[in-house]
Image 1 (cartoon, rainbow, N blue to C red):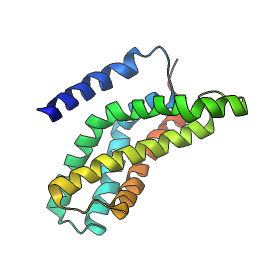
Image 2 (image 1 turned 180 degrees about the vertical axis):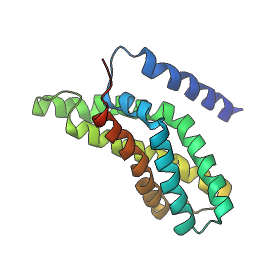
Image 3 (image 1 turned 90 degrees about the vertical axis):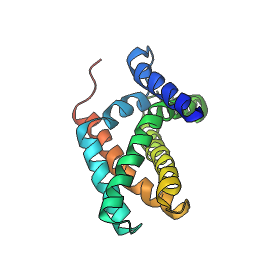
Length: 167
């Protein structure tokens, strides 16, 4: 029951936060692009390769794990990525912005946002793999999943440069 409430909250916040925000920060822009077909396809392929080659799951188990962990990270990531972006803006963002006289949309914040997105997805996906597919939850698992998630996050980030959001 608790998981159902958390998922419901993630869906509500995830769908309304980017659309209703009067103030934007990099995590909101990146989150919308993470749901593009090209970012999803790139991430699924990269993670499938890791599941088969590194974690030695069978082809069918890897396909099921890939879908399950990406569904979980999509649902929970809708909540956690914007929240991580807000946390960055409050600290250390404000300190950095003041110290270097820069604004929110600076290269450091974009790098932090990409790393947070890959890390958040890796944590969620590692939990799914550990709970349902008996893959150990360890630093090695998190490292491989973070690297695989950098593919989809990198594709989403590149799409922001190629086709910037309209204001």
